[in-house]
Image (cartoon, rainbow, N blue to C red; front, top):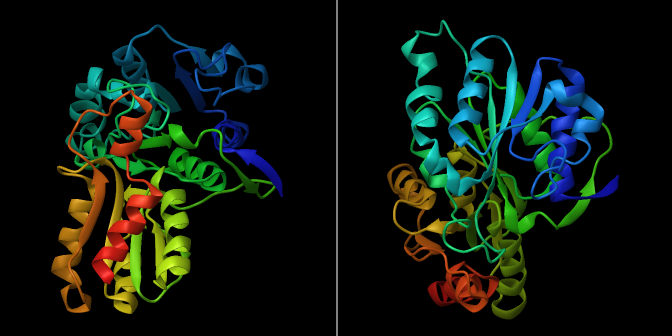
Length: 325
């Protein structure tokens, strides 16, 4: 195994699939010569050349229009929207064209494309460059939604997304780009729609995603050490498909469920999850379903205010301990 950063894992995952399949092309703003604004695509132009790795104009609509056309005609494109906030500029193409066209053509056309993007806060970019849009994408029929939390999952889930026959929104947690972890050598291919249990405990289940996963793991250790509360931590990894079975299986053992979400509270992914749990796992519950979220506000740029808005390890510990004691 070798140490790899989250940002380098993005390039490794894309390169792994481009070596395997000549039909994969990659396009976006500054992804070629510059290696990506977050340096997540460094080296791809050198290895695969300007025919398969293409810089585009600053036009999200053009990027996704080209990607959709490429997918319709037999290629397997990967397209980058630099900041996920800018999905708002091209949301019509995503929602009304890419997500619906396979259905509306009765399967005569397929759309095997990945739209990757830097997502969420933690880097002090302010309200227009720090949104977590996972819940936007989750609400659209026809899209799959992936949010990896570590370098190994970045590589494996990118492979799964590229090989999937349907459009996949691949959201990279910007706040995790510099983090490092051991990553196995060789090809890594994961599976969409499978959560991972990262820590086993018998008292509470903590479910998190993306940037919130390492904070939740840290909180679980503190809960054990400071309060004697033993927590299971589930990394959802994928919102569509959503692995409800793993969550319900953990809840059977713990009886208590907390979600830890970066997205704003109103209509967040946790709201959907706790709704399902209330319907399908009600008899397993020993207490209320509790969501730990970002307030329903634009994310501030000021360091102290952004830190206060995003769920922190301390807030997770305080909320869980107060609810369980």
